Each structure stands twice: as C-alpha cells, then as structure tokens.
Amino acid sequence: MGRQLYTTTFLHLVTILFVFRTISAVRFPPEPTTTDDLDFIRTSCNATLYPDVCYTSLSGYASTVEDNPARLAKLAIGVSLSRAKHTASYLSKLSRAAASASPAVHDCVSNVGDAVEQMRGSLRQLREMNHRRPGAPPFMFQMSNVQTWMSAALTDEETCTDGITEEMEDGDTKTAVCEKVADVKRFTSNALALVNTYANNEA
Image (cartoon, one colour):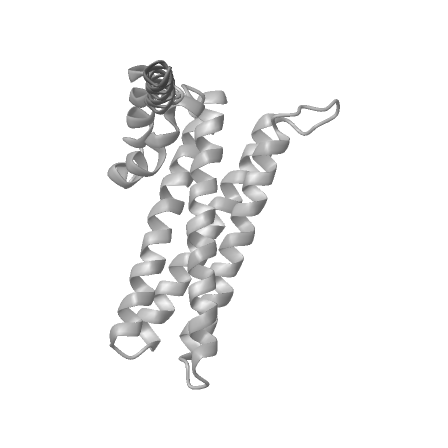
C-alpha cells in the first residue's frame, strides 16, 4: 500500500514538473519583421543626412511601418519629439540649478521648448490627415504645414546651439549642452527629410 502511494505521488510530481517545463518553454513569437520592411526603412533613411542614426532608431518598428511612408514620417517625428522633450527637461533643470546659469542656457530652454511645440503640431497634423473629412484642406496644403513646423523646429535647435557656442564659457556644461542639442538636431533633421520624401512622393 505504501509502495503504491509512493509510486502514485512520484508520477504526480513528474507530471507537474513536465507541465511546468512545457509552459516555461512556450515563447510567444514577436510580430514578424520581414526583409522588405527593413529594406524600406534602410532605403528611406538613405535620403537623410544621418542614415545610420535614422535606421538604428526606426528599424525596430519596421513591422509596424511596413512600406508606408506616412507611418514612417509620423514615427520619425515621434522619436524626434521624445528626444527633444528629454533635452528640454534637462535644460530646464540646468537653468534652475544655479542662479548664475548662462543666459544662453535660458534661451536654449525657450528654443527647444518651441521646437517641441512645433513637432507636436506636425504630429497632430499628420494624424488628422489620416481621417479625411469633407471640406478638409488639400493634402499638399496640410503637408506644407508639417514641413514648415519641422523646419522651424530645426531652426530653433540650431539657434540654441549657436547661442551656447558663442556666449557660454568653455567647460563640461557647455560640452554636455551642445552634445544633447546636437543629438536632437540629428533626429529632427532626419524626420524633416522623411517628411519631405513623403510629401514629394504624394504630390
């Protein structure tokens, strides 16, 4: 009787172990990314000034973008916007850290903040274009707004770095600010290039 109970218990434990090992072995496959999707990202990024930065930042979303230039443009703006928001937050904290902070840093807070708003407007316009309503402005009119806002965002970022370069004393803080804003400029430049490509292809 005891031996039978022991055998039954042992088999029960083996069964439980097998079930748990089977469950742990299950992996839900990620959404597949095709070579065509990645090629579309790579080819599109080749039209930008910073193709490596472009491809690295966007290729992870290839399965969502597929071969859709509108989605790619929105994604690129979204990535640039995220970078700009983080940089704006960094600059804002830096400007409040010391009463003697350079006026150029305070100007940069305003410049990058303006760039954030320009990108938000661009992204909002592109999203609204997905829902064509009767009486909506023509495609190229709306795209020209997006191009204008993204170009203005890039100009705001360049104004920031120009001011830092000319007015701020050399040092670690100056270097850090210039590097962070230069990073945002690369993403904004790429986003603008992809927006222009989308506009030209649809014209």
